[in-house]
Image 1 (spheres, one colour):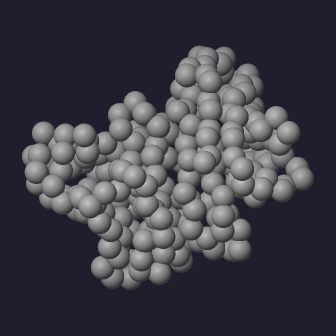
Image 2 (cartoon, rainbow over the protein chains, first blue to last red):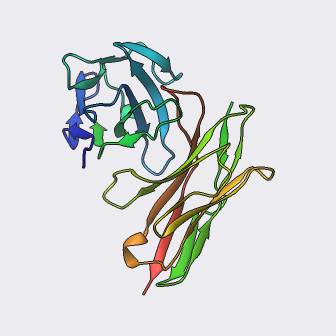
Length: 115
Length: 115
């Protein structure tokens, strides 16, 4: 069964460093998303991406964040200068389009720790 | 704005018994979808079940069913014949639109299945 994959599973970085989180969405899906979950809290939407551009972004997704689909399979989230409060689980998700509200399937997540 | 409320931070259920996890929502959108996801201790987000706002019948997927009461704006998840592997966090979420959409999550309910 197709699934969303994410690498790395864990990332530890120093404050101020840049990190790139990678995702491979389900191959025939058209819509891609990033969410984050700070430890013990609910999942929060960051950004959605379609047709090589951002569809929607939340207040969390400020200038420190960027997304890219560098090739036909990968979808990346870059955090330019990490802060302590960026420590969280980051989930990539993807969905298809059958004319309605297609289910978003999540990857296993990348746990980011900023020291 | 959309809002999801899960009022049960934790629930216990005896193995083989049924359990209901509560979810209420608020939205001004006439068309929307409600989702339930399971998050085991390993951290991944697993899609369980979906209910569209215009669906006439309550959704079912194996041991999972969704008790959808539109007038009361509730979308409770019912798990029948609980198994030890059902112990996890359960998140209710909603979205609206078509194609690309933002999921709004509740705070989750931690379910513990007792042998």
